[in-house]
View (cartoon, rainbow, N blue to C red):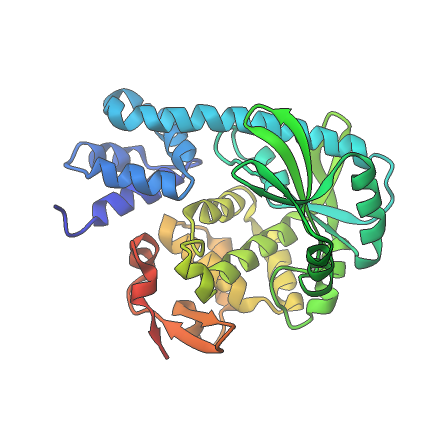
Length: 364
């Protein structure tokens, strides 16, 4: 049994780079003695099986790969294409529902990413909708009138929320219990919408941050019923970075193995590779400084650059500008319930791929 999977981990990260993967590196790796079961498990666990298949196909390497490894990835890729088609069809339904609505709003995360990625690479299970707090009643009325119910989905089984759960979500979680409607599409039996009026992460000006984001939206999401709004590309990236850091630094999520997943780094890689030029970088620095999200964005951007070996002078300039003086947070995890701080000593790539990250944490 192999004691180190350094070559396998490097290969996984190269397979993530679906826009500019190094074919020679991947070909050389698969020509060596790789632990293919380990690689396959990591790809599926990190929700990047479709990304890996696409990268291998675009590099022309599929015929060189054993079918025992290739076929599971192909199944994931083809299944993800069908799910994305259903997700985009659900997005069309939302566009028709919201047509003519005057309230400020922005669809976040998968709603836009599903259109940026090649089909089959980025699936999403629900819609995240950011609105202003005073509009929550109007949105709730519209969704309930349109056949949505408030509740939770567990393994495609809907459980209706109790009234006290709805009140608790509004009062303490900055949003609503998800709105769910059965739509019966392939691999998307239900449409779920998470409506929030506050950010899912803390900033120095958190009470104003959601409204600030909603003042900087763009209609970028294309549907059959017109364009839907999301955040400006710069703020969309800031939001991705902040959410990635929040999860990685939350002790409870480490224990549940929901803290770090490579598909979130792929999201940031996509934005860096596609949009990071001089003007974008300058706007990004301004946004990070205005929202005081230096730690969050430095963590996400630095680790994405390191994991994927990115070379982008504009990204380098952003990181040089926003780098905090104290970098101790880079390998720390926080337990909000006990106010304790934990840290790990291994390098970040080793931490990402470790089977039990909780075992690496030591209280500070």
